[in-house]
Length: 80
Image (cartoon, rainbow, N blue to C red; front, side, top):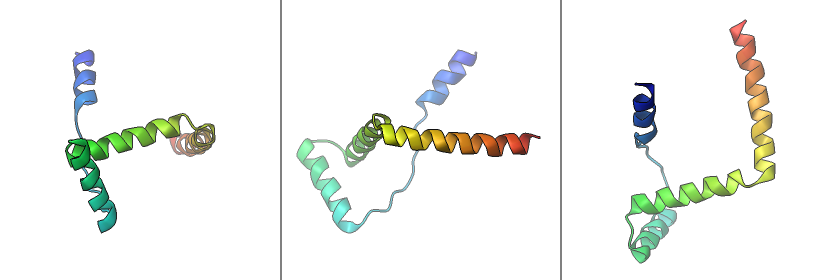
């Protein structure tokens, strides 16, 4: 059952609102139309590409490790 629950949780989509300046929204709409994609797919692809760039960035990973260490300290303090 855990495998089924895990699979289900991994496939859930989340909706959220992003407020964009008008010119950025228009650019996104134009890009989507030019690529023959939905606006949703265009924004999702752009975000996925940005995440992959960050994952490949050593400086970003360094900042993440620092944040993880700081959060670990706070969580351990709360767990006492």
